[in-house]
Image (tube, rainbow, N blue to C red; front, side):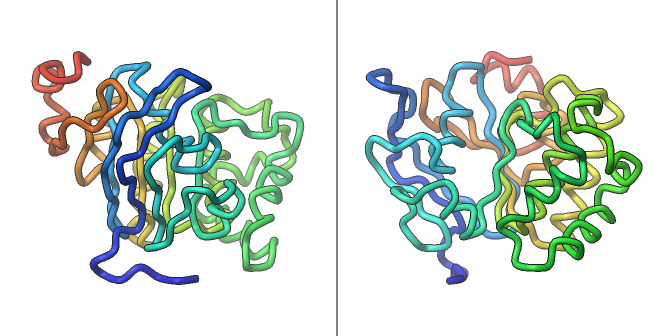
Length: 242
């Protein structure tokens, strides 16, 4: 795998446009994420946040512009090829396999892993110890928060270089939100994982992000610090959120 040099962003969008059929959603999106960074994306519902992640991951084709990963143009690559290159994606709603056991869900996550399956799963369970007690339980029987932990664990089985997260706190109890924050901090420290995070929970996005991009009407309009995003009055000025 070709590694990015110090001057090359790990992931970048260059004048990226995308939409659904004849309905445009993204307009000239420009941003870059350096290796090891955690970058948040904040904005109203309907502003294009999920569309952006789906386009970056290849589930939605770009209508113009480019996506680069580790210095290579991946704009026309399939999601599988992007995943093999090191891009991991946890979609909104988690999309675990509800009828498969927790262990079987993790096995599915190992399909692109380079290490042996059992070694990979054992390593992941040291990061997500809560899942050990549920290995034989169907994924659909877990709570929403536990399903989110499973979705994260399944994605990390492929050992991605960047993790794209879409609204990971949606419908989750506060105790597990704090657990996810601690887990992601730990992974960043130990593995140097890069994170691109779409989220509306101001505390969550501020706790995890080094910087935060504001998405309005399908384009990046501003960058703010995590401290600014913690101030709901400041955020309300340019996003209309509180």
